[in-house]
Image (cartoon, rainbow, N blue to C red; front, side, top):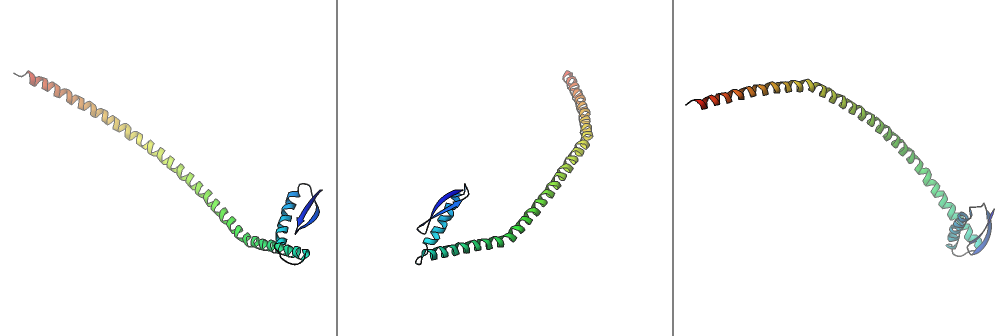
Length: 148
């Protein structure tokens, strides 16, 4: 047990508290002292009475605000849960769409390979034909040069 000396409304009070709670008790006493000093006139007991009543009123108002906020926080929690479930569903849909796109790209690549091979083969036969034509033209040009 710890002993703490408090000053409230100009009067000292010796109070016992659990070890480690001294600073909390001093802070609370400062709040009570501030309220009591704010009340002019009357006896010390009257100042403390009104300070206690004002602090009780503050506590009751805070409790009322908390009770009013609870339904709003419940609806916010529900909205967050709904948004998270929709996000998860959308993420799953996106993964499925990516998988379908990758499969379609593979199919397209597979379908292109025979067409590309045919095009390359046609290009090779065309290249050979063009080389043959070029050779004939060169041969004819050589013959034309030989004519007197």
